[in-house]
Image (cartoon, rainbow, N blue to C red; front, side):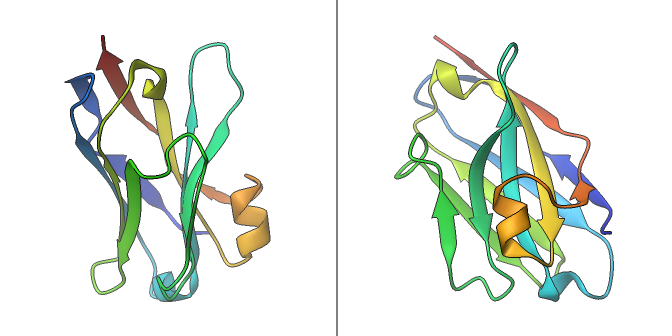
Amino acid sequence: QVQLVESGGGLVQAGGSLRLSCAASGRAFSSYSLGWFRQAPGKEREFVAAIIWSGSSTDYADSVKGRFTISRDNAKNMVYLQMNSLKPEDTAVYYCTAGQAYRALVVGTARSWGQGTQVTVSS
């Protein structure tokens, strides 16, 4: 498994933007697919976005399409989530995840997870 550490969460007003970062360890970083999930109070953890090892293909939850962008920098072992036009319903703890199997990654069963970073969007 890969060690993952998220950063960049915080408090922002509705309509604002935040950029989340996730730093990953390991020489094999470039072979892993990467993703973001989130969990709001009282709700199940939900898929947000994913990117394959090459960065050539991405997937997004319908709720964030057009507002969020996932990207990766394999040279820096980093994955990012740019969040624009934030809404109060985006408030959640955001988790970075990594795995060699894309199918497992997008359904939330990959082995590697970060500790999470809190995003709070005020009305």
